[in-house]
Image (tube, rainbow, N blue to C red):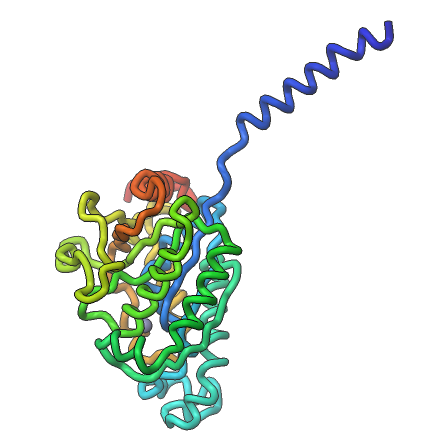
Length: 305
Ligand SMILES: [Zn+2]
């Protein structure tokens, strides 16, 4: 009697568990940022903030260079760090540690989970990616390290720079290294690799990009338009706040970057193209991500102005 009374309850509990399992939400998105310099993540900072804060996603960052270059405009950081950072000898020694701290200070605001520092030389400004890959970076070491990070992280997305001709050779190089590492994975295991660029709402110049000459892995899918997140999306009381605030906070964290500070409030749209590398369901997965980025609740209660 006692057993027969218990059985239905046990069965009900079993069915309830099965029901809960069936209704479980899908796993949070996992993304790896691969950038060249500590401040490059500003290009897609609002999207990262949305992934971590609105979708509960996990975002890690792999930084290819040591961040020891670009010191000539560090004038305003000299009294902050009590160092003559515009002097190359001082900068090369001190900036790698300073900029890692600045990166992590900004990353705290974005909700970045983990960092991987590859510490290749941030030698100088150049548009020529081929000389960087041939003579400046240890590309075998970078590719091995990125391969290991990708294997261990099981990422859904890798977020990089779109390697448009006018962007820094280091940016192009970081993207090529990420693409080569993903190309080394089994197709079924590959994350979707996205190339990012910022634009105003009327700037269509980067839409002409299809691939970087001489680097066929950088070919993008032209059968789908860019996916975008609009930094000017409003929220909060009376809709008076928007995501440019987050981007500006991030830029402010990079005190040693000088002219970078002048980019505050610049750029409305964070755009992403899908590289043609064969990742399963790349378009459907990316479309689903950006639909969720736009639709998930924004902070506070948005209301008409
Ligand atoms: Zn950069």
